Length: 134
Image 1 (cartoon, rainbow, N blue to C red):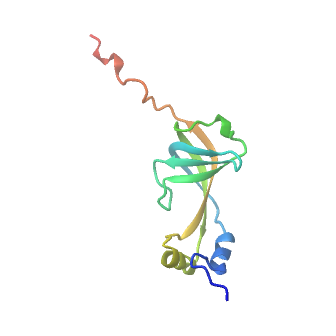
Image 2: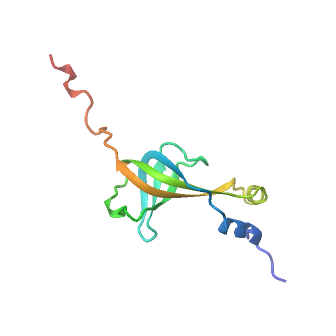
Image 3: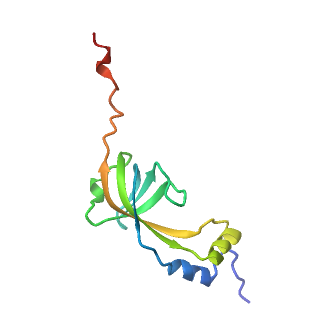
């Protein structure tokens, strides 16, 4: 008799997650910086100063076709404009994940970067250089 693996997730859970229905996207703005580039998948990891809806500060974003990843800079501060796509999970799936896998997840999120602007923070220049002149 085949032994069932403890780590296995039941088919009904994976079916719901894979076939999640996303609601109309919500456009959000947030500032932060790029942590990592995924050239093959056209994605970036971003650290946002303000958390997204589920409490995360680090999210992976799909990069819109009009944005060239090669033009972006790691560690520089940007203002990001992105769509947040949300697919709520059923109470049954959420409870299973929390009890059996210790994962607190009520929805699946996807993020799509629409545009970004490099912010000139000016933190590299000494502030108020001219104030001491008499």
